Length: 195
Image (cartoon, rainbow, N blue to C red; front, side, top):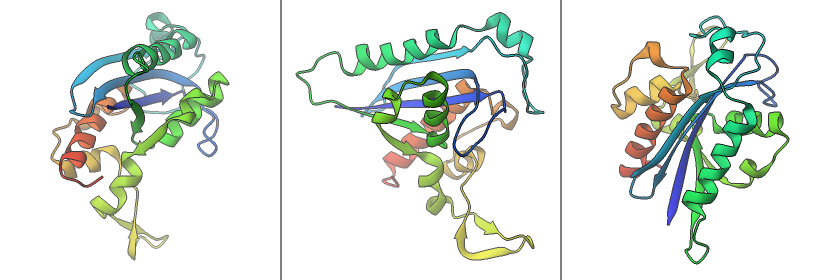
């Protein structure tokens, strides 16, 4: 049986993108099986943040700290879900894929911030990278001209529009919303044999 853990995080906007070293402020995931049945979902703010360094963040640091949980509590929930829902019966031939839009960033940040490498041991499916040659959005050069035969990584909203997934632009960057949209895009791509 194959399982897919759709994962997304939001960060404080501090640190670097490559390598991914940013502080998580929200962790969300949904677990689905190979028939695309939703098994469980989870989302939590991560308290302990002092400052958020991105302009369009819909929450204040105060809101996140008031409504958040400890980082380790959220990470433990993720690993408990994997252990209890996916690998609960060792007699089954079971595999888990971590799916996300720019999943290397999410896994990298969680691995760096926690010092725990377990998440990086699973196979990943990146809807951003897989969507590049599916959406075929021209990459533009410094002169803003299209570069022939070069495509850019699609934003999640661009992939959602390509897949016909209804979305609301103002809701993106809430990691639970991004997980839901990523799951719908992933299912569309799988059902149409595009990935």
